[in-house]
Length: 478
Image (cartoon, rainbow, N blue to C red; front, side, top):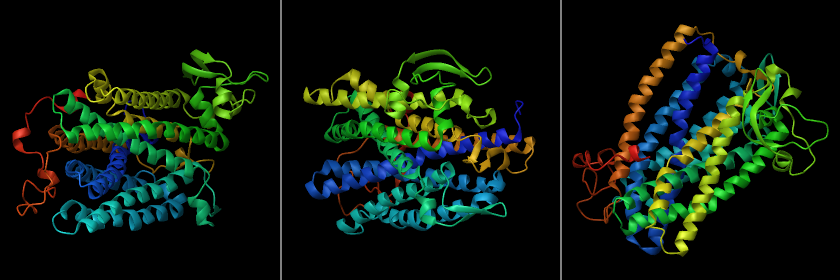
């Protein structure tokens, strides 16, 4: 297929399915915490705006959660189908970690999700709030275990190899491996930022169309406070993560920087833009800033950054890809910080909800957090190559013995099914967003209960048919 080998197709298939999957957990993590905050504020202030927002976003959360579960199951099966030799080599580490995720996070989420979605008029307020908080905590615990497993593949420790298989010797060392704290914080914070811009974009869309009410304004206000506070924190976490990567995966940093060789004792420049050429072993059209590479990556003006030519060609990541995926992530991060600062300036001028240029920026920034997450994952995973377990097992040695024909057929089927299934799900989710929150939609009345339009218990029937042709699609706008 297009001159690709079975290994290439297996990698593309995994990249395709995980790219779809990661979008849903990211929003699930952020929305779960957002819902807990909304319900907590409603209980504390008795401001019905928070309650209305809770019921609006709980519908979207339910659809998103369902798609995340389905897409996640596919990921688990691929370890056994396409990467069986990896499972045989490292399954004694990754298997238990993923099992812990199911036994703790998934059971916690699933156990309280029903109360959260269907129990508004069935249980007490305190118990319902507790259920919402448990679901939010469950999403974070899930992140903990997934990142522990993936981080171990990046910086493995706490094991020994017996008869060609990894045997854990220290589970605390396995879980809390050197890159784990940084990657966990980076991913969790990215999910919060991505959700903030998703929520902010939906509010901006309604305000630009003249739908101005307290709930819409509260959505935008809360989203922009989150962007203002958390986006700069994410930049700081990213800096610490970069220092950790430089220590444990220097080849990845060299590839990200497109840095091929050091000259004498000169400090390393920062290449803003260019085109790394893997064959010619140089970065074409490089636009450099002297000393800045050393300053950012080593926090000094004289230390040098490892160069790609210091590593054998077979051990070098693809600099052409990670060079640009990293810059997409960082560029979007800078735009997020700018958006947060602009929102603060407009807030002081009392024009946050009426500045159309700002609202258009927030609208177009809606998918920016998710794009940045994808770019970040491409950077970290492609930057790990050619290793599937860094320094221990190469990706070429991890795949199953499938033919090109088998991998081609399954890849095509995945593409068709995913775009049909999850495309419909995303379209329905955007339809819910387009409707916007209804005032008093969560009001406690005797005609609530399952099966009634006023209840939040039916997320899959929340978008009435009479809204099918209403206005332009938010998807088209974004």
